[in-house]
Length: 139
Image 1 (cartoon, rainbow, N blue to C red):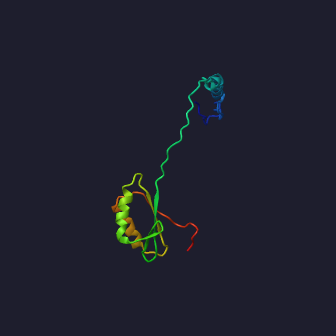
Image 2: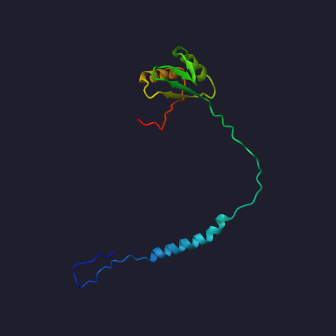
Image 3: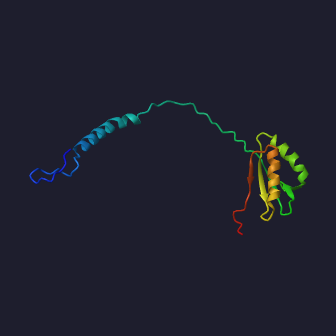
């Protein structure tokens, strides 16, 4: 590589990129790809056995637990006393697959009611707990 100098008698270095080696390499690669491309599309025809298989997807049930503003609980639409909640959660936790618990709390209900339901569910070993909200509701 040469650098320019301040001496006017010496020839100046060119500020151009020599693209001849780049073109040579690209032409070699082009020839290689032209030769190997038909080999990659060649396939062997075989008759594979045909079998219909439908996956057995077991979707677990879910339990909807609604909490009103005054703290009353509804298990799938049925009024439930707070005292029987732990027994119901333990019964549901023993099922296989374990059902999901969907908590639907009233917008004005106190957080202590929701926290109580969540702690009872956790003590009963329920692992799938979710909250149901209304996305169209605005405040």
